[in-house]
Length: 88
Image (cartoon, rainbow, N blue to C red; front, side):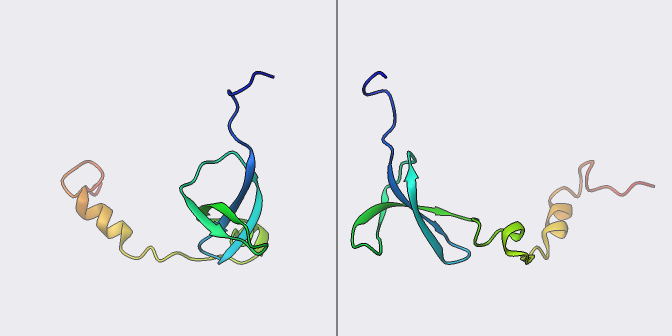
C-alpha cells in the first residue's frame, strides 16, 4: 500500500440531532467539531439528520414533518409560470 494517499481512519462520534442519539464508530469523515465521549476522551463530532434511532424503518413509527404551506408557497412562487397555471 502506498503511504500518505489514504484518508485517516479514526474513531468518530455521530450524533443524530432529531433523536438525541450518539454512537462511536470508526470513519474517515472530516469534522471541525469535537465532543467528549463517555470514556472521557475527545472525538471528532459529525451531526446527522437521521440514523437507526430515528428512521421509521427501524423505529416502526412514522414521524411527520410540518409541511403545511409548502404547496401554497410553491404555487405562489410559480403563479405565472407553466406549473402555476390550472389546466382547463
